Image 1 (tube, rainbow, N blue to C red):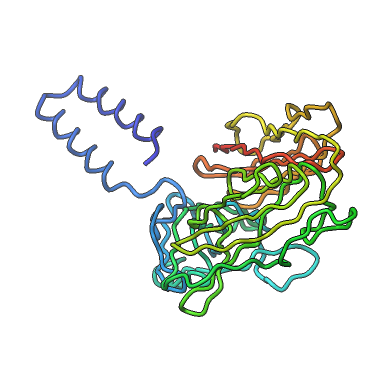
Image 2: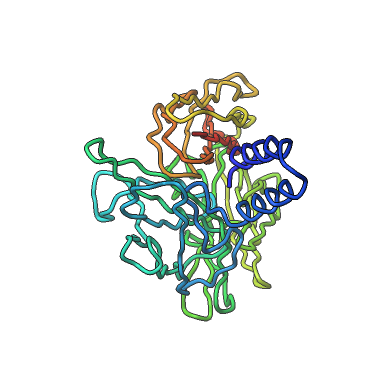
Length: 361
């Protein structure tokens, strides 16, 4: 039950109580309590798995949803994402070309048991915090369809022990060789931020990506004046020379030697500012502003916005200082999270900045 509905019922009960006997008032209070405890969810909600649940990779669970007051639902699509993964376009056909499409983990219908839920496979190669996104399609007859969603974050653990840590890169890793494009798709420069492709081999024969600290991985640099460790498992080039990055997880360690040879012109990294969290109404045009992002040397910035929480929305001007989207229809307040990263003209990156937009009915 939402706070709005509960407040209305309490106000109504108090009004009636003033005109009734104490016995009758107590009866109404008891009735209200029963209603509060048994009233179904006000909006479409994932009821299983629960927020914060711990699941085994490769296991099969039962997904359940409460439709709440949302009528006309014809199907529910389920998607798995890493906690910080970009939300991808949702389509029934995961083989569609021309865009990046999120693979559908399951499609629930009214005929299934439980309705619009069912057996859901937990990806076998995942580890750490995962987002389960459920998108319900609502039929509106001749008006077409609209969708509502809910999302929970669960923790996925491997069923067996970690046996070894490795890196999906050349060894040693050479950065900035005479201005060549690196293996990470950019020209290396002072201040560049990158992630190491760290993987773990497990006793069940599955290789899982374990680069995120949320999966239990920690990083240490032997030469912070060459490679600096940033929050979130990010690394920044801060000088020329050699460094060894020690990666540890579940009692295992692995070193990666890195040789940096970039333009040594001093360059301070820019700072991303995605603005403050905000609440908006469905149907309104929402502006995301990175105008407060700055570069210490006053250089022009390149912007990159992406969405990492909530059902996918079309994001306009994602490479500009200000991006925007149309707040979708929701039955209850829902949160959409966006990430901004800025880069200066010399190639130095910021640490990503996050902003939450709560869309209300």
